[in-house]
Length: 502
Figure 1 (cartoon, rainbow, N blue to C red):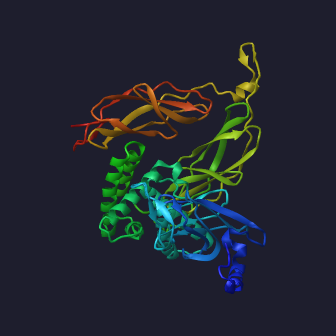
Figure 2 (cartoon, rainbow, N blue to C red):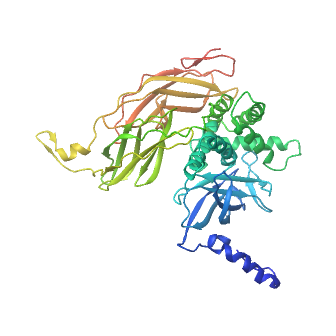
Figure 3 (cartoon, rainbow, N blue to C red):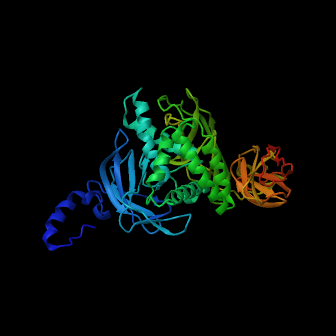
């Protein structure tokens, strides 16, 4: 807040604060049409008492005009008022100061978040309804952004639209490396994100062991130099791999279970990273066509909408699709289908789909599709047949049983292992919603994907795995063929058909 601390400087402070009153001085409101709030969480672990500033993002990827300021709460959350007129790309920065701390995942204790510590997050198009996470991963994307813009500038003029595509590409590049689907989404929603932050924290702890490092900058330098050109042949990237794998091994030992499994998968990705996209690519994918929907009632007031469309094309490759309901993005998928569930029955929704490539180029939106899922009917049977009203809403057909169940095991410690399962997709008359996974007849998890990791089992014991598919109406398939898996203790063996050889 703009509070005078000496009578002599009251007038000076007021003069300094007046220009900021309408852009968030002390978290205040804005003028000229009101304000909106940009909110989210700042994490290393959660950052408490950090300074938050929101800026416009300039065409070269740097911070522009200040839009608002604030501080982070005890849980790392923040909420900053900015002018309601703000749209398009913005950057959120959290900087340390005296008294600010973050919670170390390695020691579970508070660590000073000093003035030398600073993380930023870049957003391609500000939406007050979507929280923005600020973390070491988003900082790496912020550092990557100007490098991507340099490549794009060799083939085109940097406009706001090109800047937005570069922001998407920078965030996706870092996310791909760490196996995190959306680095701007809350880490609490992603085991992979939590695991990445734990490994980075361990990297910081390791770097402080010599006593010469007191903040996060040394580790962030290692990460940023690696992200600058994701190429295992480069010395800077190999330095990152060495530091990362040492920390990852410790985190996996300290956190058996889902975190350990995520760390193992992440280490494999970091060690053998995907090739960098051609960021100079400015050709957008074709617009999605053939958008259609099938609805199924869940209960008397809610329904499921299953969207399908014809795959878009691109000069290199389509990376995925963003799905919008009534103009708001509700999800991202890499396939030509998406399930929106639950939605309210008897309400008309308008869906569109946008394709994007790895360089951040977005297609035009598909033709809008209006969908009005009907509520479940209480119609009765006539002559042994369900009336047409109920029959149209009631799905009685189960999916087909999954096939091709296979497993790969990975030793975590001398006595525990993880089991990574995969299988072929089931089919359904409406749409498969997900899969239940069973170990020795007991359900151990549910997933919407065609894979599942049983994070921590005892090595040298044989387990029997099966999988069942289910749809939005609750119909479940027969079980897949059982797959016996015996994860062995750590060895130099290889994986063959779900078994690790001695």
